[in-house]
Length: 461
Ligand SMILES: [Zn+2]
Image 1 (cartoon, rainbow, N blue to C red):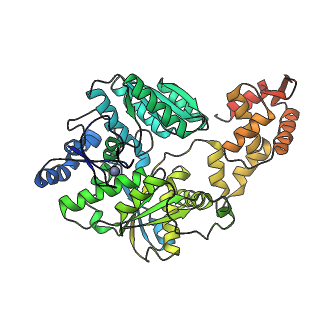
Image 2 (image 1 turned 60 degrees about the horizontal axis):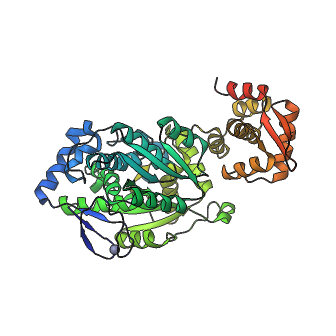
Image 3 (image 1 turned 90 degrees about the vertical axis):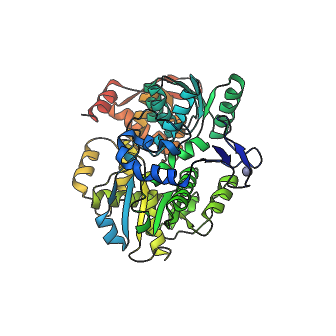
């Protein structure tokens, strides 16, 4: 095996500790020294060994032997009948939310954990924004590895609870950059295995999703993929190039769909733009390997909520809104004429159905045919969604002042003023759901009352 830099073309011998190209900082690709016939045999025979999970492709994974599985991979591909009809395109969905942790990430961490284990590591250090951490901890358990996670402190509370449940060490830092730097330093200093998404090993795990599609690849015109940190799209492109080379089939174009960072895009939900991906090396790398085979599309949050609502409402497919990004992109691309009428599109959908009440409420808000009876009457009997969020924050924090609550609400996506938070606190005090603990000289401190706790419990009945 070798490592190849897809950006500057440098080649290196495969080494477990190398993550990025030392010359240009790009992600690296693993190149396998096996014959075309052997490659072909592995790809064609994998389906009959589906019970091995991604290890059905072990001959073209960096480990080269069979690791343990939690049931990742071989996710279903389904046709969205109503969505297709409504949008004038044939849409199929590769449902990656059916992986053990609810995302495609399991494909990468399954391989990385096995490599850490099989090269004699006992302790792993990682930096990520939550989903990767949860997935890694799950697979680390399988091999008895312990993980130290560096996590930005803004990640959702439920993810922190999930990590606590999995029993690994969590160190909160200010942002993702710091998380990466600290993890790197700790890995270098103590010789610990570094598990991060930006790794040729993880990329090769991710690309197995393309190998599972070889029967349909020549029949679709587009693959729509979400672009978060750019690694999934990179992995898919690597997989497609391999399939093209080994099996000699023509593969579809890529529709790379990215959540727009423009705040003012919110006011023009239907007017969206073809843009380039921001941010240095990943952008250059993606542009280079897409070369003529792909298009970038920007979507905003509204479009994503609308789409999540639409597919739940018409096709019975419930995914996290972020997981619906690729489908939102298909609608835009169709409107812009990038995708033609009747084109066949395969969308990669990831992210398990959200159990977060705030997110579910947001999806409901975007319903085009909301049935007001149920949702609204329950709301009137009880408290507003913001008050509920405040209650939850106080419950999780044990105690907090209005300013602290306001900051947490902002992180959760509530765009409200501090004064509004004070108003809601007043209402909650009147209802007896919270109580004032005291005054620290600067701010009033609040906590959930017994009645408030009862209310929170009743929500789960
Ligand atoms: Zn390079």
